Length: 531
Image 1: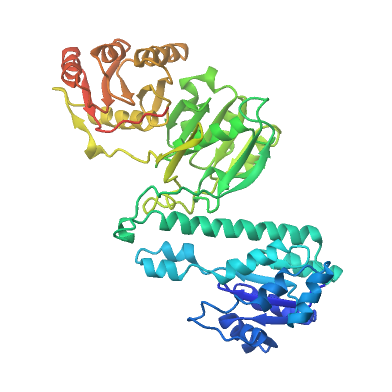
Image 2: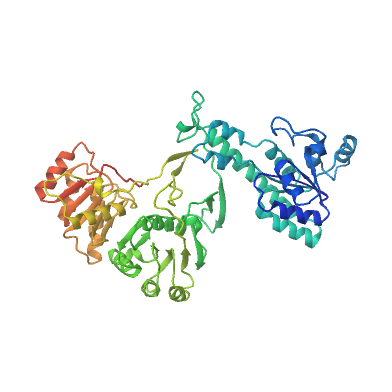
């Protein structure tokens, strides 16, 4: 039974309504500072913590709840006579509910003008201490650390005159999770600061300690293979338009491979500013195209490699309408992703019960700002033996003015458009990558080979199988050609222009070969390895 509740919150969302409901239920209210004033101004009988403890707040409020009458009231086990006797001996009353959220450390350090002093001042001490005490004694104390928990607890109180053990335990776990998140944020921030200069403007990109907090979205049936287990986790604050924000509208449960491939498709397709379609198989694009609408983009993307598209992942960056749905539904597709579907499209897919249809809102994604605001990862991580490799994500996007023409023959305007398109696709193809393109679509994709020559050959085989000509095509290579033989082979297959990073010790030899063969070639100055 809840007789006394202590409320002390930084974010006061919903706390007045909670306090009013508790008071109506006969609960005595304890509070501190601004929270106490809010409750008192609303006419609620509230006891200041300083009055309760008999000890005034001090050190600018740094010491107010760090007192035996607070922690004894939270930590005492009601089922142990010796604990209750100790409370009686020292004149300590039990506290049955704790409502606390913490100083806004994360929000403070996110401000561009945050100083080290501001950051440290917003490290909460008393709040986490109380939360830990209450959460440890979860059988006897309800601890609420988020306004979203208030309604459930009040409903149980109203219905049963008590809070269930299951809910109390769930709230306890959430409390410890919140403290872990809070401490991780503090650790990440402070360990990125040079202890000599303590200059927050020059914080290290990679702190001395890397703390990650992820929230489980769901367990998965199995991992890449049936003998592996798996689960999907998300960031605490997922970026807008990212895969984990997807709403599944229909279809079977997503598998580990579905999710991995869907992410590859989604990241590729949303990089285009015009209507685009990406078809992914085994994490590689097997067809990418742009068009006037989703149907045109899909029709062109499907042409690249109809065989590999079977059982693939299809993603659009624009509305999927009825005509597009009719075309897609003729094929076997595992997952379909789009930012919007017409009612006609959804009606068509209803007949395909196993097709997983995902909706991902792109309306909150910004074209500029932080990587998070653009819906992109700021960092990538790769698990290795007992460690992590961490790097900035490959968020480089080529501009026309970045191109450097290195051959005697300059590319035409159409060729430049094809080269830029090919380069954009190559960024999402596993290295070694060779991509043939023309007229806003992929013509042949060669991925993941140990030799760039083999990737070029595979791409040409794919094109031939699809009945597509590579004559006059634009070719992108994700890394430089170390020898002229790689360039010769793509020209032999029909390339009329090439885009590549450059930077090889044999660049002169490769440029001379391009001039000899009469093609245009541009350098980007950046590579896109995707191992």
